[in-house]
Image (cartoon, rainbow, N blue to C red; front, side, top):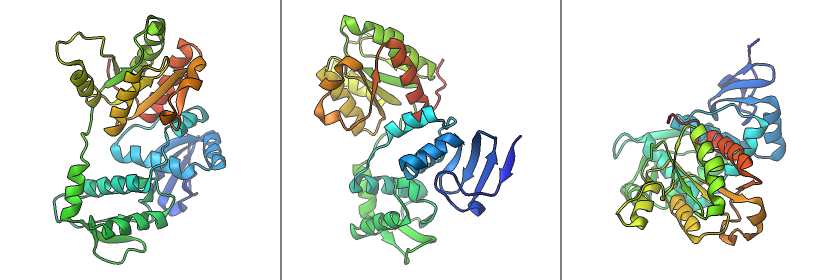
Length: 309
């Protein structure tokens, strides 16, 4: 039996007047003005709070709600995959994310818009409204935003400056709508089962089309082909088993474009991963079925379910 209750959001703890919670017994369906819309099991909500990742989960949900990405039910299993996707953004990265959020709110140059500082701070993975306000003030100090009124709380007017538009042009990125998942991995014969029985079926099951550069012979320059296909992909799977330099290059190129990267490595090669990528969480797999199962969970939890046949 489903019951609608007046209680706070189980993730961000927003007051009940701004939240609708439907109790399904072991799980909750939530519509929150701060986080967005999602369904989560009670045990996953408790685990997020215990781990101290609730504010990051709130930001993750809000990002997918705003982009229209389907959010699967958050369980203990998917929470683990989601947590591994969290990034610790630098201040400059958060400022760029906030500027892009301002751009989405602006209908034309000179348009005046506003954020609700109490509700909108998850859009930049901020810990609260104080950090959100700090980022706004710093963007104003840099001349990228103009604060048209005092902004301690609530809705107050903002405007992107000419310098702000130039900044956004400099940091523009393509908005990829694609059913393709690019795969960077070793082409060694011993890795063939990982492709055929692990990565390929996981991407297909998630509703996307896997692409490797050796799949389609092409007379074009291979480096240009690689970069083009990465740009045309919704995400990239980088299996660094056997430590091929090309895999690291392709993953780095995707990261520079803001394309999600799923890092994978066979368990017996974990200690050999490059030190520059150790800060990223890796799918550590024992066999091809383990790789297929984990990768499918990650893709559907982080990206959502695709529609490719």
